[in-house]
Image 1 (tube, helix red, strand yellow):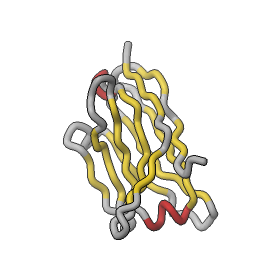
Image 2 (cartoon, rainbow, N blue to C red; image 1 turned 90 degrees about the vertical axis):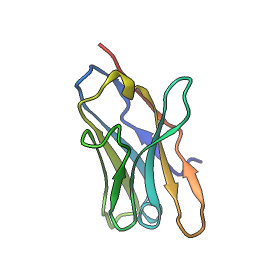
Image 3 (tube, helix red, strand yellow; image 1 turned 30 degrees about the horizontal axis):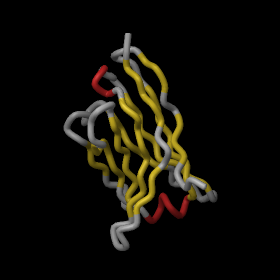
Amino acid sequence: QLRLAESGGGLVQPGGSLRLSCVAAATIIRTNTMRWWRQAPGKQREFVAEVTTGGVTHYADSVRGRFTISKDNTQSAQSAVYLQLSSLKPEDTAVYYCNSFHVISGASDWGQGTQVTVSS
């Protein structure tokens, strides 16, 4: 059973927007650095953005100013991390993966990925 579940991908025109979601148990999101990665066909997986347990965010240079990562601060059992994609370009086309990383133990978990295609 996947502990991270992404959704929200799709086909969008250049300049458009999408919002990706990664649903997980709230304890995972509270205690892990949550990251988004992407992998385009024929390329290595690359870092996109992260939000730390303290809410600090970091972005790859290629997406800074266009993408925004955020997370729910919920008291319920399930929570989510989001990636708002704006001003999309064809080179943003990739499978986007959600990743949890525990900075002390080094434990890491991955979702199944969601496809984002930017094309006219």
